[in-house]
Every structure is written in C-alpha cells, then in structure tokens.
Image (cartoon, rainbow, N blue to C red; front, side):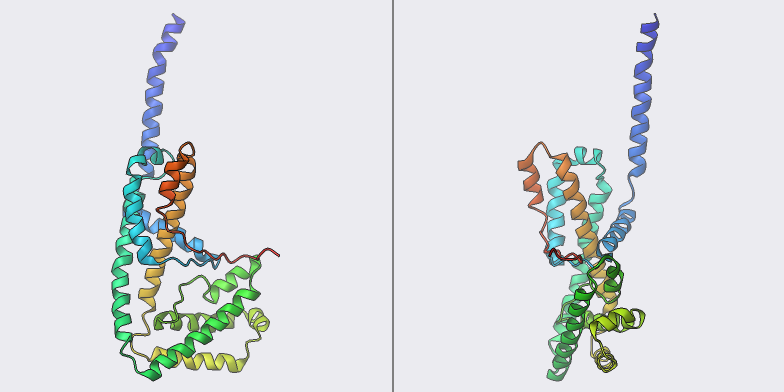
Length: 269
C-alpha cells in the first residue's frame, strides 16, 4: 500500500515541477523591446574593452534575417538552452533599425559628394591626424589597465575616414581623453602644438555641412554592436545544442558573417 501511495503521488509532484519549470521559462520571456535594450547593453560591453569589429552593418542585417529563419527548426532545443523567440524577434528589429539608419547615412554621403575640393582636403587632413593618434594610442595601451584609456580615446568605435561625422567624433574623443589621461599623452609624445592643431581641425570640420551627425552614427554603431552580440550568443548556444550534429551546426554557423575582430589585447610575443 505504501508503494501504491508513493507511486500515486509521483505524477502530481512531477506535474507540479513541470508547471514550475514552464512558469520559470515563461518569466524569462521578455518583450522584444526589452530584449533589444539588453542586446544593446551586451554590445556596449563587447566594445567596452576597445574591441573593434570590421563587418559591414548591412551585411550583418541581412544575415540576421537569414539566420533567424534557419533557426526555426531548432527553436525547441534552443529555447531549452535559453534562446527565446523574443530574442529572435529583437534581432529582426535590430536589422530593421540598421537598414533605416543606413538610409540616412547614405543620404549624407550623397550630399558629401558635392563638397568643394577644399572641404574634401580638410576631411582628409583631419582623418589622417585622427588615425595617427588612434594608432599610436593602440600601441601604448595594450595592457589590461590601458583598456579604459583606449576606450576614452575612441578605440572600439566605428571610424570611416570618408565620413565627416566619424572623423569629427574621433577628434573630439582624442581631445577630451588627452585632458583625462596625461600619462597616455606623455607616452604618445603628443605635444601641446599637436593638440592645438587637432582643435583647429575639429573646429573647421564641425562647420562643414553634414559633419555633425555623430548622434545618428553612434546609434548605427550601437545597433550593429548589439547584432554582433546576438551572433555571438547564437553561435555559443549552437555549439552545445548541436554538438551531436556537426554538419548542421556548421551550416548554421556559416550563416553568421565572420568579422575580422581586432581585440584590444597584448599580442603574443
């Protein structure tokens, strides 16, 4: 009798446990908007160490759509491992946002083609100066303690020498960080006359038509970094979820664009 009672009680306990498990899983499901914010935060963390990725935003946006569609047949297993439908929906929202922002950037680029020769020369000078400082900073801030300083100087942020907004932001980051990190300035050998020249370039470039689009540029970079974080999350979960099917895992991995990531770490001697 004792066995019968024990056996009869088990389904109730099992059912209660299953309900509790489903409840916990449901509570982890968030709205796509909340998940987008979480992905953006994850993307910021990825770039906080001055890591930079070299993939194209549009390529990644298109790849995100293809990847989400391809994951449809594995949703149950991925859900068990913590990848929920809300996260997939959030990735599609990020892809939409990137495409929308790129339309604005493309319009600014078309306007920029009409710049006079002297404005183009100014942009080239400013970009070369900013690039030189950024490269020098990367060489003297390779240790763990240097990551915050490198980030302050703008390393890890998108930098396209043909985009005035990128160059203007880079100059401003350099000038602001130079005041906060005198030890880095000393290592660079950045003279006061160099900083004066950078300030003049920043002022002239800020007056150029369409240059001060830093907000739009930063929003694009933010969304792109979030999408790359989503790719990393999916790749990690696929590594375990499909460990028994390496062929299918490889097929899905191939849908994720490979970015040439340059981590801000000390190179092996």
